[in-house]
Length: 73
Image (tube, rainbow, N blue to C red):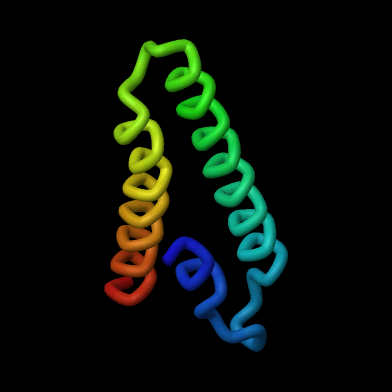
């Protein structure tokens, strides 16, 4: 979902650099979130099921909101 939101624009419309950088940045932030929740789970500060699903939910909601913003505007 997150990858689809940064790959929908046509290359003719410009803004390719911004699209690529936002995709790389979103992927990096999702990776960091998954590692932080994994560490919190290992330290028993967060329930393992919540630690497993939090990055999935955040990534899906972020991608969904980005798709809604691009298609509406």
